[in-house]
Image (tube, rainbow, N blue to C red):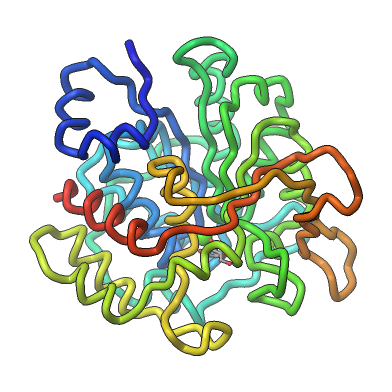
Length: 338
Ligand code: RIB
Ligand code: CA
């Protein structure tokens, strides 16, 4: 059984890749997505669930952009819209310390810009941290052929940290952790901090210390995946309920002042795109830590891009993304959804 990366799907052409996966000749990459939907989380879920190169084992949910009661309903509705039978499991409704602060200015009161989606299937029983550990256990040791699980974190890292802290030995089953988190320049929630890192810096510190391969999609990267009115209009043309929902959700997000109102970053889908088309990125190895103090720097990710401290790298920093190829990948993947 060959395990192919998303690159093959891209190189082969998605249709041929789908046929090969369906014929059982290729094994899609097992992943688990932890999220806080969230307008951009919605697009990331559609990208992942629409592409056969990824085998989404579960979707776990935390509070963050909006409260857990909204993020959980949104995750169930989004997965339900794709028709995929993937378990959605509720997780943390607060960070390890304190409480989440919602970001309704970007995501609206309901978390997906006020777009009203039909209710999805009920959440699977249990808690996110346990579901993450169960999925890791089932995936087996990452150093074995065809084993291991990739964790994609596109919200506060609370659920991931709880899983790692309660059963550290399962880290050996992690093939890679891909996080949309952090900023090496200015933040988007404070001058120093990006929202996910700021929402639970202690959780991010636990994940950064797990000694497994970590890939970081920071604000500098995601700001290049700029969702402009033209790109939204291009997505609006065509069939499909998920495509229409994606375009409708994108259209609710206000343009970003930090980016001269030219559009808004498709933050979370960048983390998924890395797994599907790494060739559209450039990257470098870095040492990264997060500030857990209670001062003005709380939640700041200090990312040593030039190895000034000569510390061993603990993460791969995604530097650039080709936006046109990113949005083409997004459209191609969503086209495979109902
Ligand atoms: O800073 C952007 C990140 O915070 C994204 O994951 C967005 O969904 C919010 O969670
Ligand atoms: Ca998110």
